[in-house]
Length: 113
Length: 178
Image (cartoon, rainbow over all chains, first blue to last red; front, side):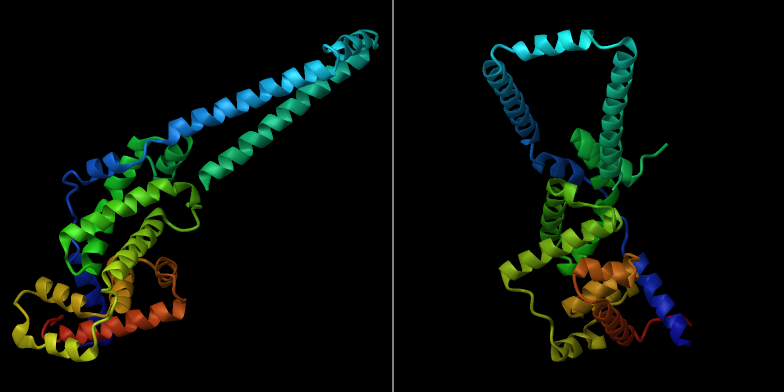
């Protein structure tokens, strides 16, 4: 008997000796054991983020003397030539879109990997 | 169209979808439980407990799955680690010595039936050879994949597969192709 045939025979027998095992409630038992704490952690994260943002806004408002700089900058903007305003608006739009694209692409790569 | 493992993993990652994870469990439970049954020498209850731990651990750490290997290979690695940790706790991680191997391989003690003999012969192999043979010959992993699962060098896997096969062939000498 050829050595190669003998090895092929052994591998075939090993594969055939491993029959399919019926689920028989196994998956349900695993699902019952899975942790369910994740949504709580996510809501905690959201509370922290929103809280920090609100605190930062309040701090900025107080430190900037009631947000007076905003009114000053808006007056300056209105004094700009129309072409400059257009360039500024288009530039800002492209910048935000690029940021969104980069975030979406990196998230897609993360999920695919 | 049936979703791939990658699609299901993405759903678990993005939406924390436990139903998607359930589908992954359904797909891979047979292979993982089968491997653990062989590693635990057909202790079905222990093998199923370890298989449950394997999938729960996989769910908790699914973010660390980078897709460098197949999902099944990643699961085998977790299963093997669960088995090792449990064996270490039970202090059973001691390979069977050659003397015991010879004694148990006595043809008079082996029951009839090729499948039974094969399972019996497998259970007599030392753990390192049994694991390598099961992963490569039974579950179809490449030597490289088995090396990742077992966390040992590629050369060691090849040696263990070769030795394990030789011992199996010796123990199953009465069977074989005509």
